[in-house]
Length: 458
Image 1 (cartoon, helix red, strand yellow):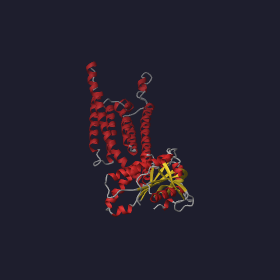
Image 2 (tube, rainbow, N blue to C red):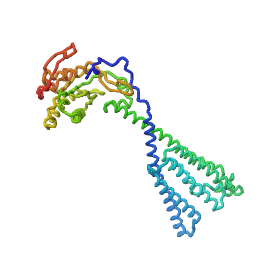
Image 3 (cartoon, rainbow, N blue to C red):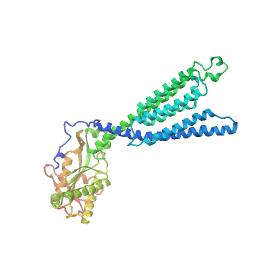
Image 4 (spheres, rainbow, N blue to C red):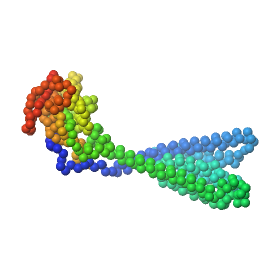
């Protein structure tokens, strides 16, 4: 069961860990996220259209009433165009809100509503000049023209750069077309240019500069969309990589590997405290249980181990059949690693005894725990399709042999001298033997708790 752990050091051909390559899953996740975002963004844009429509109504129509009452001046033509703009934005907003549902939405709707927004701005701008008999130079004087940057800013919420670039192009062509169609001139009135400085503000160079500013603002939103999509793709790639690592690596190790811990990726030597836990007579217990009940038993046992390990700040490297390999001091060594490992063993025995007292199981559960401290090689072995974090070396074998020796020594916990030396309470342990253990030549000191729990059956 534990032959894979018996290597004396790192494999000679061990290679540094290579990050998991990109897979179609990343593209699918980005597409799915963008689809959901597109629907949510269009719903938000719809409500913003409604807000724009109400804003136009309040600032022009209501303000016109106040102005007329105070001065007797009426902005009739402005009011008419304001009605068109207000009702237009309200109608388009309501329509986009109605179709911005996952089951109804189609990507082509984004182009449709974008064209309606741009078209509404251009039509009202054209009416504003035609109704006043103004040439194309006066286009910037139409208030609705300054809704163009707002339309572009709101459109950026879609995160669709193609739709955004199309909107920029349509606005630019539409504004240029209106200016040319209404006889745009170099200056509004050359004869009055010297005595009318306000007219010079609508000369062609100034208007071209205004158009450039609008186009640059639109280009900035397009670059923002591209950058945001790249950040999203990068975040999804990182999340997929972390999720893939989490499938194979312990939760305590995966984040370190994902963040680029080179030492863990290629493997390293370090001191660690190794704990093996095993259930005694699990074969006999399995014989009297149906498979479903046996699965529930092992799940309950592993849940108790995990809870106990976390309480003592270790981690389960792997579950091996009816046992577990638990590590302390990995990936970062600490001065109390051995003390926490020994405390974990005592705590786990108490948890199992409390479990037995509930009489949930047909027979009492007995465990064996072996603890040893020493140098190990820890790192990732395997390839991208099947990787595993593990510890290798003689120290791992010693901990395994100590766990097996609990059957002969009649106790639940055995620890090596190296592990007990790191305990803060040396008096709590008694020397019970000195032997090389199975398969080894060098003897080690074996310790058991001074006041041991009930003997393990086995």
